[in-house]
Structure formats: structure tokens, C-alpha cells
Length: 215
Image (tube, rainbow, N blue to C red; front, side, top):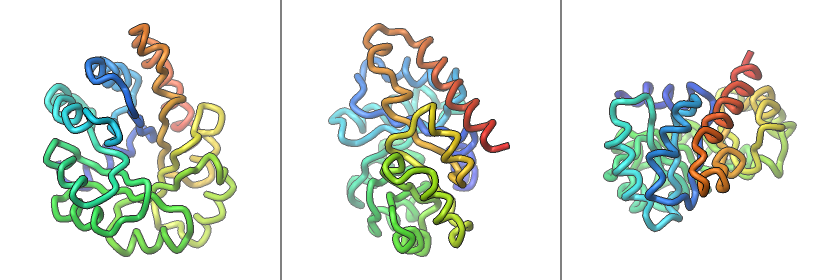
């Protein structure tokens, strides 16, 4: 899969599942449930001690599916390389880190640094970012995305942080290319009860809202 196809895979449903601190032994079933609901991009955050092992496992278990596995909360180039060697096809950062962008481009992986200001957006794009992540988007609101997309319409934005079923469509209508959903999608109680059907249901709801907003 070339880099453009990886970008297309991340963006197709318009929803990136942010898997933070989830139980490693249940991760394959969680991923399969999300995939059944149409969410194909799975971001495993590296603040989980088992994250690299999870990425390796998912990369193998979901190899013949439409899922694309990546890493999140990547803070430096060394960590980006470790995530890539573990099987990550995309890398999310909470901040703008030039070395992470350089490493990801070196290995042909999709890189999405975290930004907030227009200056950071331009700096990230000029440095070689494929997309940028506005975080925390929930604090800034959809109107902020609409405002920055005016002069920066050529820079694709993914919004994360505080995204839920009530505001996901607003961010897409404001100009976001996709949204990242964490706690509002990855229901911890459902996981504890192994109610994976609920995860599939929520995934379908997010995908439907995003797809309708895109129209």
C-alpha cells in the first residue's frame, strides 16, 4: 500500500478511533467491533505501556482486513521509529515535532502532528505533514475550524479532543477532513462487560454522522 492509499484508508470513513489505555487482551475484539461498524483507522496511543505489542498484534491479526493501524501520542522521533517498526502505518502527535515528521517521511508513513494556531498548521505542512491534527478541538469549537480553513483551505485537518456524537457533524461541516473519537466511541463500560455489539453500534453512528455531514 503506497502512502496515498494509506492516507485514503485513514480518511475513508472520516472517523479515527483513539484507543487509549484499553486492555491489551481485549484489543483484537475491540478492533474487530469497530471495523464492523465502519471505523477502519485505529490509533493506539503510546502512553499505554503495552502499546507497541498491541500494534504488532493488530497488524498481524487485521492484516487481511480493511483496518489500518497506527500510533498516537508520539512525542519524539525515536518513539515514532519504534512505532513504525512495530507496524504503524500512521503516526499522530499531540504537538508539532519536526523530527517525528522527518522519521515518518523517511519510512513512507502517514504523519499527522498536533497543531492549534495557523502558524503551526503552515509550519507542519511545510515540514512535510500529510495532515494536521487540531487538538483540543472541543475547546476551540467548530467555528474556529471554519475560520482557519478560510485562508488555509489546502491543509487537511483532523479534529480530536472532545469530539462526540453531538458535535462530530459540526466539525466536518466546518471543514474538518475527519474526526478522532476516544472516550465517546470507546465505551469503557461496554468493554468491561464485553459488549462489543455496543462498540459496533457507536462506530456506525459516528460514521453515519460524518458521512451525512460530508454531503
